Image (spheres, rainbow, N blue to C red):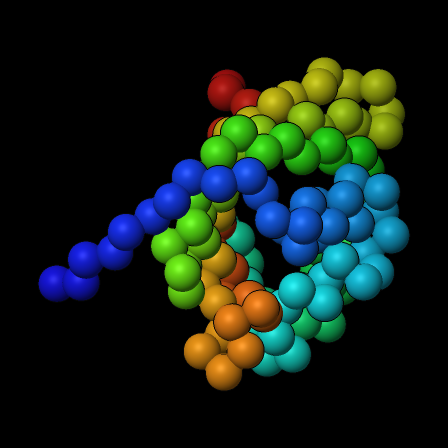
Length: 129
C-alpha cells in the first residue's frame, strides 16, 4: 500500500489554462501542460500523445456544443493532482443545457513534474433516460 497526503489548494494556472482552451475552443498553448507522450483516458477514450489529446478533445467539442468548466475542488498530492468540478454543456442547436460533474486525476511526469504524464477522468452522466 502507498499512503499519500493531499493539500486542498486553489487550482493552478496550468489547469485553468487548459480548461479555458477547451471552453474558448482555441486548443492552443493551454495544452502545453501535457508531456509530449502523455496518455489521456477520459471515459472510453485512450489517447496517446499531447497532439492526439488536443485533436481528439477538439473533435469532441466540435460535435456541437460549447463547454464551460468550473473548478469546485483541487487537491495537490505532489505527483498526483485531483480535480472535481462541473462542466456546463450548451448545445449549439438550442437543446437542453446539462451540467455534469467531473472528476479528474492528473499524474505528473517524474522527469518534469510541471507536465502531466497521464490524465484519467470521468464526466457525467450528461442525461438520464
